[in-house]
Length: 163
Image (cartoon, rainbow, N blue to C red):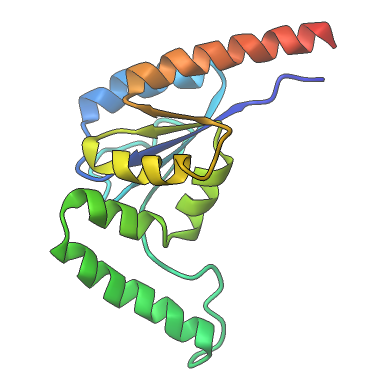
């Protein structure tokens, strides 16, 4: 058995701190983590220097299908209506509404080894998913994410030595 990479989802509901990312992401990458960064706000931080997948959360349907089909109408509804509704809510509810309607974020929420809330606006989303998903770690902040990644990497190294 080979040591597999540790998958992390970093979820943010407000603007990202460039300093926190600059200090927090390189140690995670050094441990061999695969990082996906999803933010409700447009990414203003340049993350191109790191090999991570970073994107803005967008409510949409995975495959919208041909124009005027039911899945296309659902995609348009999610893209327009959900974003408008989210603007009327506080950051916590808006982040949850948008994240749980973005196929990329939903997939990452259910498959990541460690899911990290980068701010208080993302905590509610993690809590909702943690109620239904018993495996995986759900943490707040990059410091705790680094500690859990180290622990998980150490555990996987021990497993691979036993095999």
